[in-house]
Each structure stands twice: as structure tokens, then as C-alpha cells.
Amino acid sequence: MDPRETRTPSDAIVVNDHVHVPSSALVVTTARSSGPGGQNVNKVESKVDVRVDLAAIVGLDDGARARLLAAVRTRLDAEGKLRVTSQRTRDQLKNLADAHDKIRALVAAALVAPKPRKPTRPSRGAVERRLDEKKRAGERKRSRAGRADD
Image 1 (tube, rainbow, N blue to C red):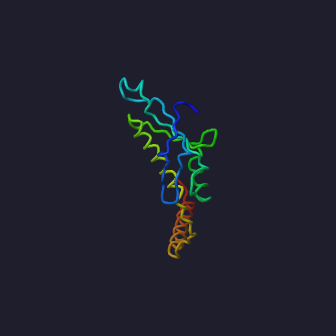
Image 2: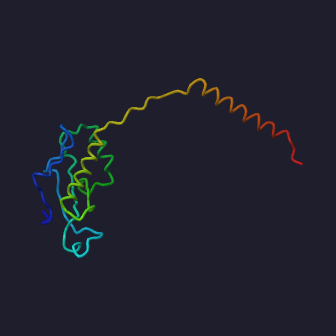
Image 3: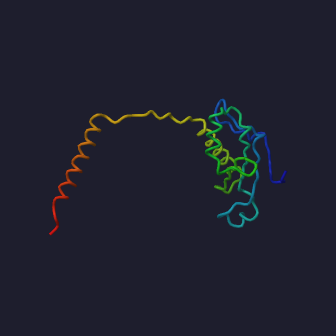
């Protein structure tokens, strides 16, 4: 394990009463952040990189797990772990909290099943308006065909 990687028991992410990401599924790495920060930016590792083992998330049903995998497909690393980074602030703990919030939001969004589409039909009035407009357009074109340009 890299010396910058940490695993702390307080890292568990609670999404709701039934779903949580255990601390054993998280690997946190720190690095120097880019952007403003003066001389501090060269010596303080405030950027946080969190890797999440999606298979270890507790409480996800198969549908939610599939939705989560589809949503984060582009953010997976070579090992299949979700990679979330944060360097929003100059404080490492705030960036860690921000990364946890991002993970919590991704998992919570996957819990919401999409509403099934109900097939609908156009109303009788809408069908009649469409057909009337088609007839008018055809009449317009036919009336143009009889004229010869002078």
C-alpha cells in the first residue's frame, strides 16, 4: 500500500438507512492540489483521490447496482473501482468530505428507478388537425404546379 493511502474507520459513507459504503471499500490517496494557494500549494497535499470498490457497497439491489455501473462507467479505473477526486478547497478534510458527498450523490441517484414510459396516443382532435394541415399543404403545392413562371 502506498504511504499516502489511508483507511480509517470513520470513512464509511451512509447513503440511507439500508445502503452504505463500508470503510473497507474505500481507499483514500492524497496529492498536491493544483490552483491557487501560494507557497502552501507546493508542500501541502490537499487533493483527495478516493477509490471505491463498487462490489462492496452494502444494500444495493441488482437494478441499482446496474444503474450505478452504467452511470460511472467512464470513471472506473483499470481494477474496476470508481475514482472520485476533489481539490475544491485548500483543506484536505473538506476535500475528503466533498469526495464523500459526490460518492453519496452517485449512489443515491442509482437508487432511484426510472419511471416506466407509458405509451400514449394522440387525441382525435390532434390527428384531425394534422391531416387537415397535410391536405392544405398538398393543395398549396398543387396550386403552384399549374402556374407557369413568366
